[in-house]
Length: 332
Image 1: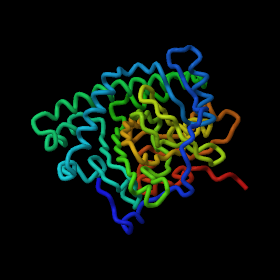
Image 2 (image 1 turned 180 degrees about the horizontal axis):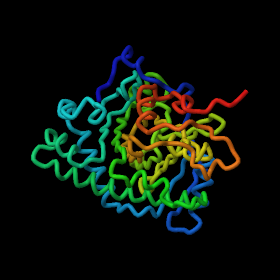
Image 3 (image 1 turned 30 degrees about the horizontal axis):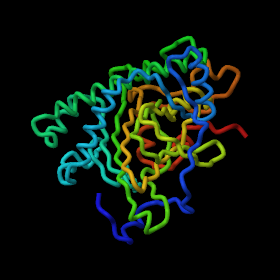
Image 4 (image 1 turned 60 degrees about the vertical axis):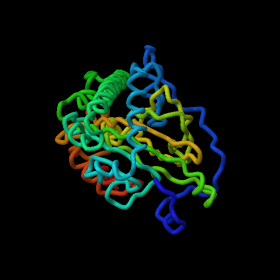
């Protein structure tokens, strides 16, 4: 990514009143090996919609291999990377996020989790050896998907749901519409010195899927929004995973779990590389509050298919409240 002229900077967003980063120490920490995890998961999802997990079972070897492949890819000349772009919706993207005018200081690879399509798409970039990247991706995604399903089943236990796999079966379904994203945020010391403001790498948004599992290198930048609207910086931890509640899980729990609003600020001195698995349901799956979670209460959301919600979400801007169109209007 190249340094931009001052007029070109106007397309990007900045955080005014730049301050030194102060990390929030209250991020819920969940040890997945402990028996009380299911209750802590529910508490974290109700209060933050966000938490950190340790003893997650994903081998560090899988993490290191995929991060190495990602760094190698993002180090390629732009002309090489653009051979697998622009994203439609999958592929390589640079600065533009989605189709509706959102821009960030980021380049990325957006992939579906179908291994055949990955091999075909990347043969042009990885030459005779796309298999190395495909294997690293497959090992990592398989392990993270397994962890996601375990977390969702522990959530179901914590909610005292009879059907333990009520959430996880949607990810396990062969038609599951899950996606995987590699993000690279280059450092931008000259730009931040020029503007004396923090640059937005990826603008504020919620994730539309059920659950997102994020792992990044040891570079700061991730922020989440608290219930009072304030933003807090998440301390980086390259050995752990951060988990977001998505919009679909908020709906299925009838608003009990909160879909967390988050964003990424650039780091002026260090590159940030993040790897995110977005666990989604099949396109035809009906999304609605679970009957057992609305006993004696009103349903806050209309029923919709994942296809309908995804289409609506992808036609909106990042910062839009996407769920508002699917809320039941309270009787006046």
